Length: 209
Ligand code: DX5
Ligand code: ZN
Image (cartoon, helix red, strand yellow):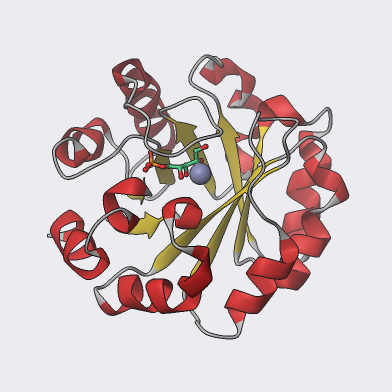
């Protein structure tokens, strides 16, 4: 299992320090939520923050783009230090282009779908991506409740793609429900508020136990 703590819930004034704390506790990925106020109602941060943070850590930067027309910015996010880039199927007319842009730079490609989007929407791209990111809350905000019905999608993708494939699940995961998400077939777990709203080191250790 890979834990990818989401910095959306971090204290941005001491971001590098908090990321180090998560890393020291055993986190190997860092989930970086980019929001444009258009694809989702909320705005977060973008390239300058990622670029600054890159100087302080070698942790895998798992960049989750919640932005319209991601193809316009993929190269910029990779220039800023992304190791993997995930785009939303609902946000682009040109998923093939997004996949190609990310692959051409030698980075890991993720494709994501919202809780209400049918898995058939991403079916044509499954063989061309490294990871599926299943949203278990409506994207836009941390601290929401896990939507149980997405477990059906997790199970389906796991059966369809086999054991080596990466399935990341994002939203509403904490120490009480992490086991059921893993049982459904996820192998990469995003946790924002469950890590950064508390003792970071202790929370990462608990989730990874
Ligand atoms: C929501 C983001 C999530 C969010 C998860 O749009 O994609 O990554 O930070 O936060 P929690 O773990 O608090 O639900
Ligand atoms: Zn996310």
